[in-house]
Image (cartoon, rainbow over all chains, first blue to last red; front, side, top):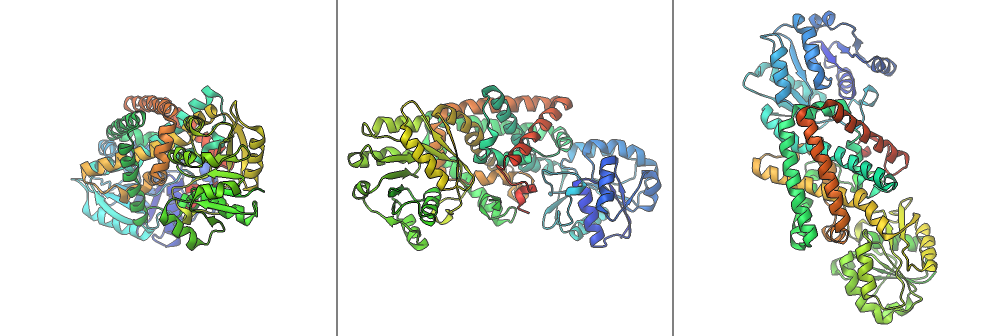
Length: 298
Length: 298
């Protein structure tokens, strides 16, 4: 396969490097990483890729470019590499929101250059190259974006690439993607951050030591509330319309819950608590989570 | 030690039976369980306790009574056993909310009988005797309630009992207890239920298959949203004042988050997302959760 350039070598980028080199998916892997700290780590980890200092030097020797940086970096990098890109380059990214970033890409990318978006549903509360692992994408979904102007040849190339990396692929348009993930990922993260923030405010005000008793539920939320702040700011900003709508639905339901609790409406509360149980068994059945109680952690 | 009577033999009751018999904490364990299905399971599991049919027959031969039923069952059972209780009986429960249930207990329990409340912070999304385990309480906090009328002798007895069972103990009053757990446990559960409910509503309306993509965050919430509905209805109802206040704080913070996202206030969003990260490391440091990424489940 074509030589691959990974731009941004954190959790996902470094996992790709590991898997690509292990499975010998391409002859050469180039790594571009702006953080000096990360470069030191990559060297120490002996990741099998060539670290490059200047993008322009390596673009002509590359066939396939994967953006693994936070979405807010795309524009800057596109402007740096535009002059060196040709219509043969296959370009993708792994960003978690699509409509807004596609707009930025369209606006800034040189004409006749194609960009075909990917979103592997693989991540964690930890970040950095030291936390990457070669099986990060194994059996995980990777969403491929097909909009009006998508280059089908590139889309097929990406489908085959992500399969080689271990993912299951599914194709949808940006609009559908951003709606679905506002609910399954963006709102849950926002809610988790917000819950931990509320607990912190409460702790300050009451001067109680809450964290000590977090095993009753809070600790579950604290995990995703520890995710990378730059990445998540970009996601919230890039999908703000859908995220706002999701917040509204959530708050409306929460108020209805509160009313039922205050009025002691047992029938309605039991109905709510029973319905939601079904989702867990569906998730486990679809192998989207472990079937062990407590995530098997105890 | 005195003979022990476990009333209600689900996840927590059966875990107590397992641990008490393993560590030979009492000569005899009596089990009272109203569900025929659970009685069958207990027999099949060969739990080392004597299943009793009538509470009145066994109360005189028991020194220590532990209520492990949902809190909404307390009143009915108290009225059944009142006539057979003496002031020597040590009585506790494992309920997750205290102020309201203590009121019900005070109102219904015969005069001069003491009830000393416990709350072991040990639970799971699974329930029933088949899911109990002897080390469920190991290194977990158990809160002991000390209010104005608490019998100190009984409190000391309970402290020693929970330590034998493997717990670390801490003493506080009902009011503080209910405030703390409204934030560390009750609100997180409510939020998880509410998020899953919102996702279900969205799925119905949009006809998208969301669950398939739940690995992006939703699956974490689905775990505690699968908890026992009777137990959680009772908790929400019994701590409704604090839970309502916690909801209000949460919604206020969520609206502030939404405003920041809509206006693109990067500084404020980053501050929020960074602050909450610290909580995770505190939780891990205090050994309230595993230090493995993704709860070690992948």
